[in-house]
Image (tube, rainbow over all chains, first blue to last red):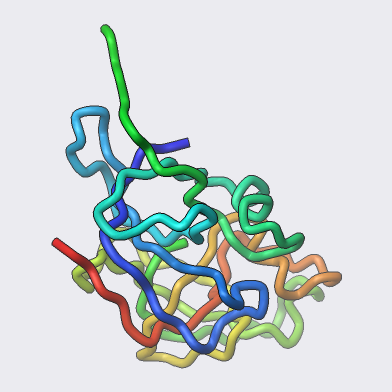
Length: 90
Length: 89
């Protein structure tokens, strides 16, 4: 899983039926010091996350499909949690 | 998933039989600000996208799910056409 920040939303009318009523979020993966890491990606939302929130994202198809609760959905990423805090001790 | 622009299409006559009838498109992934990012790739199309449109695509074997039960040999597939997207900076 990855820590990411929700930076936007995506609207699509013509899409695969398995996406019906699913919320699509643009999320920016973050390093542990909260700096952006890599390219933003689209994830389906299964927890009701909003823009600017820090979230937990799975980037793997099977897990994302389970989060969406639909078998055989063509998804590869999902928001599965809203992060309250991260505590790293090195 | 990732945002991309459809920049072309492919005609492939000799191919895996499970790709028969499936449209192949050339994608340029884009960042949240719309600028090009990363390498272009070829993806199967499950939603009827056209050249010039902004789409989102899925990577991995899940790209073949829209064609179930046909097991399409692909690692990327277009699954939606983007109307618009909003980012908060």
